Length: 221
Image (cartoon, rainbow, N blue to C red; front, side, top):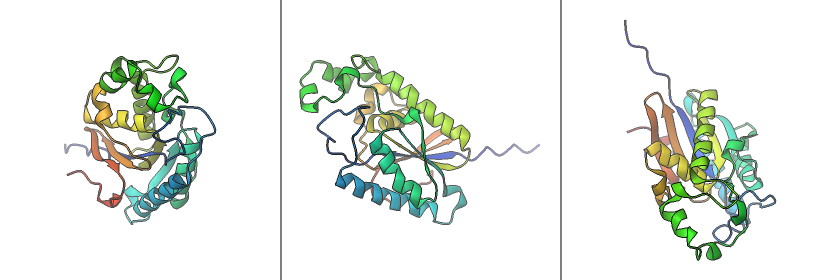
């Protein structure tokens, strides 16, 4: 008998939210009320145009089946124009939520960088738990589990998941088979796209931190 053809992979486009007034200065975490800055709104419009072009580009398998976002305002505001460009609505998934930074929530990064724990965060994050919050391994399990649910729900389709920098870096590291202690080497800019195809043979990373490329060119080599 001929061997059964494996199912088509699910393409997940992981999008970091746009720039906020505190990007690069404060660790906002899950604190509510942080919205996109004007620059972030412009970035969201640009990434929506890129993903919208992929959606309407003629290939049925590249049409966006769903747009998901974490519950925070900055991700929902980034996801809104993407969903509009794809003729759908934003769905909320708590698995995409920012890491729980506990007592570090709202702290200035320049102050955190002076702490001895900061070296651990950068060089050995797998051993670190934010005081009163989440550990990096817990965060990685949460984002990879969320992606697995989306892939199960949208087999062979293309979905967008708007999340946060560390989440996307951790997801990319897991897909690449890279130890979590090295995930800080991955750069994920505001409104960048990290594209990963999840198939029967395992994940294939098609792009990381893509900010201007034609997304229709994302195919396995």
